[in-house]
Length: 324
Image (cartoon, rainbow, N blue to C red; front, top):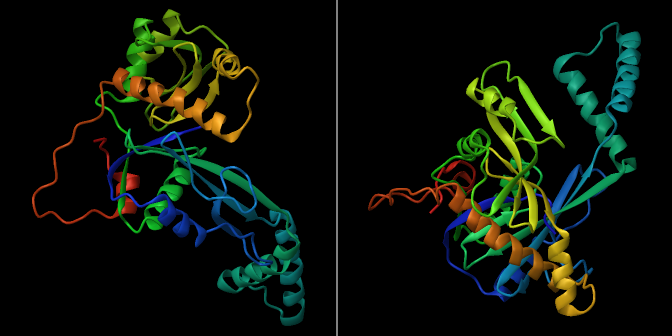
């Protein structure tokens, strides 16, 4: 369900009913790209049903899914057509268009070719955990996660305020400590993948893949100033993932013990939506709680001054540094 996850904290949410949220989502339902449209995004049914509900509640966990469709014309095709057009104009007029005129010709060519371009679709799961006051965005990049957070804020009319989850101890600092001491935090084990970067203009990088990290060489790189930016971990022998310096979780994988346990409880393998949500959220909820604890707990922040103006939701989601 989640291969990657960016974790946000809910600072404020005047909760709407499921029916109200469904109505709002329906107004923003996904519609495929038009003939000359480059991109289209909207909400789709998490269960994959064509006309299904756009929000699902499973065990108190709210699940949504955003679908994005993009169309692109190969750059070499555009360049070839543009050069042909520019050559023809130069032959006719003696002048070769440049600057703004060349740009307008390029846009015209792209517009003409878009109806024949292939469309590419991708979906991103969104998990809202009201009790834990967390939102997980299953995006592959911070930019995409931020864009979805902005959509959520707009969807709920500004009643939702999110902040990127941050902790008292930064992930980079914590990872440095774990690697130099060769000791993982309680409940976690260090796996065989790591990336270290020098925080300077050259950004020299050292990567370990399928390699033990319990060696002096790793600690020496850190003592020389390199900072861990990615570290593979396993939580409780149940979920493996890669922690990044921005506290994103990458390459999330539920291990066999989780799947076998779920099968043993049900008597048969269950690939249904409800079971998938229950298993995934049931594993990731304690993982995130323990990870935040291993990083010194949620970053404390001073309460806003009395009479202070309200923050802009989109800016809060992208830039505010605190986790309540």
